[in-house]
Image (cartoon, rainbow, N blue to C red; front, top):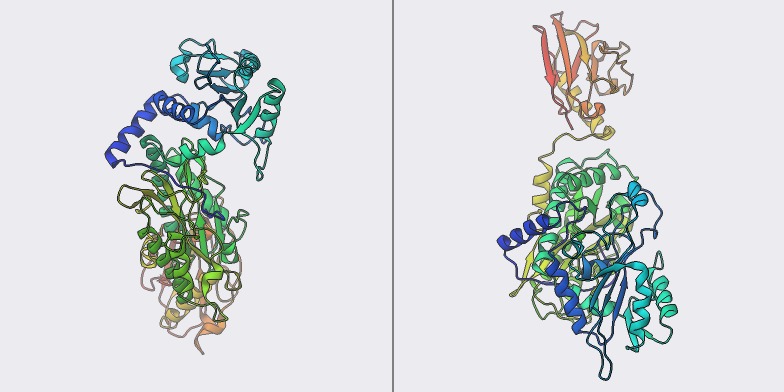
Length: 591
């Protein structure tokens, strides 16, 4: 998912076996929770690193659950609060206290988690919540001191008498949505009017850039499930369906494999929509010859993947589509090869992966006016991923082992209705880079090979392809001079039959289905044969992927005789008739 500028990076040196072990341990820690926590020691270590970087108390607030009133949204914790506490319930706060400055003393706890008091009435609606008085609350939260939220004001006032400053999250110049930071920084100013407030976000961002083994295990899991969803899309995407249908199948794969959170709103853009970076309407119907950008990924226990592929709607790139695709892929390969510790990603550095990708695109291919393509690469190459799909990072920070970034060049040509983006998730290692999403095909040949493995999926008929198959079948009909066939078909209940035929005789259809007249194609028949031939076509894709069983009763007649002569063809153009004996056939669903 593109971002305007490179936002950050991350870290690890975790083997596959170690990652699997850590992931298994995480799931065991919190099997009963909607979002699995990592071990308490993981969060405690993060808090200790933050306290080592500050010289004043840190006061952070979780979300209240009232930030968004949309009923279909599940609660998700404020990311920085979750990063330090692992607590994913509403109405909490945390206080972290470093050693006091010279001449001052503080005898209170260094870490305090504040939770709402127990509320049985509310829990009868929303389910059980942790409370300070719960048995074993220290073991459940990882905090030795857990207090009721109303006591926070008194603690803040006490700290303000000792420390001249308090760290918290302050509103930024680009803050959007509910003003969480503004609301709680205003609250702090009322409780401690004499204390200066300082933004703690940059210090937490520096910690979040380098990922722990546990974090990398979760990101890797999200990537693997996202890859499965993309593979399914490659095997099922076809002209005639809608963008939202593609997204729905991919989201089903995510949830079915245990990733119940989307990393971001899915982007499935066909035709001109492939050139819109954050397109999210998903209402267009995919047309024959379209290119389709699929930027869809899930999150595992809060940790996001970010994967994009660009597919030809009919399974085959046109020469121009392949040309642009190969340029984007070449830029991505060159950029990935340049990823290693110590590298700065910004395009301000002419040797950076970002500069390498841009220069590659600008030196290959032309637009319709003969101009270089660099002007159509309109976003940054990379961003961090983690608890946010655009995880915070510090610009111009050299890459370190354990950072996890995206590499996602793209070219967008609106005048050609042609956009191509290829995005993979990359772990910075001690010696270079590991592509976490490498299992998902990237080359044009690989993509076409996977799409050739198509299997049935619910879809609407592709009228263009139906017409082409009818013409193919007519060519075969010209060679058949004898056949008088009685046609009957049994269709799945509730599905409409779409039949097109020559002449004015309706075929019989059993099961309560009434055929409809369409597509008179007598002109396609050879001269002198059209009088007696009635062409019957039934594409099973019109039945939503349900197969068709039909019976053909055939009797020989004199060659050239006019009359009712029916021929059934499947979508490949094969004539389904037998002029010498009755035949019953069952066709599977055909895409």
